[in-house]
Image (cartoon, rainbow over all chains, first blue to last red; front, side):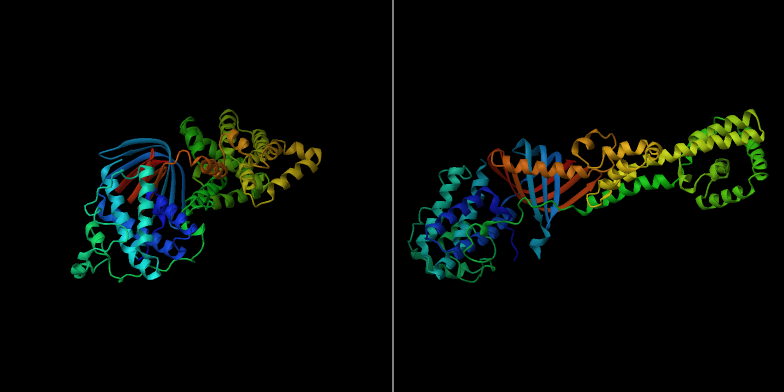
Length: 106
Length: 387
């Protein structure tokens, strides 16, 4: 099963990579195992988002930059509004990175 | 921090820890290391505010580092399918069997590189869309160049009385046929090629002009002139004057096509063509008369040998938006610098991305948003952007 390494940039992913970095650099963990953990994180995060999360969001904003490279869309929005039943956030600048969902099902 | 985000994160942590446990044991790292990993991970998450400080998970208390759960063996049959998502309780209590083998990963031992994801800010690659757009832009001016816009003439028609027009036309033909027989034939040939309307014949007088200038937008000036002359008097002399007038028009046209020089200019905007340099040299080296003849052009050519952003900004109708790329690159750089401070980020998968004109619509799913230093998860997201 293919996985995205995309979510490693999220808070939880960054925390994990930092942890692994520390443990690898102080010798408690082998790099091979660290990679295994990261791969498992990719899977678990994808699964959890798929099965545990139900909320829907609408995003509106001014598209400052778009880019489609290596099956990854990158959008940089200005004055973007994020809405769902809980939140109504406006940010002056946000970056959206999205991988092709079809690649996962392959 | 929404509590459900915290809950999902905890479940992910538990899931990961539960599923790599066998790897740890196989590698001889032991559970202590794994538990250290987990506690470090959770600690960092709490520090980041991504999960709430008191992690309430049902079986957390029963799970101590290195401690083997006595119930473990009894429940072995239950732990089979590790492919699908398991509730944290089951996982914590019963580590999965070594069924699953993680996929092959890149070289071990790369300290920095191993966490890289390919989705980072990469070099700009022009998308097919923009290419297409450029193609269209490229064609637009040329089409204008070749197509005789019939509209000015058609628009002019209602101004004059129809009867006059018909009358003029007949006479014109008579005049024309006597002295300029060959010219007329040429005219007709051209007519044929350019597939004119019947009324267009009148415009063919300037056919004695050099063929290159045939494409000038002569309708505006000359057709007006025709109406004037032909309504007032109808002598051969007039005809000649008319020719002169159109000849003048031709001369004008020889300068007007240089405004077609938008084309040249446009081409010189391409970074690969050496056109700008050439133009520049021409301007410097040409004899004075030549410069005089082409007076309008060199100014333009000098002005635009190098498409600086400033020039593009001043240009009222920039032929291309290629400079935008540069701007974007700059912006990207800027943004890369300021990213640590204002890091709003959405990581997701896209189902569909569409564009009509400057309206972009995209459907995303399974996303993590990091806005105002808090995390929000979504299952689906609809994005509507205007570019």
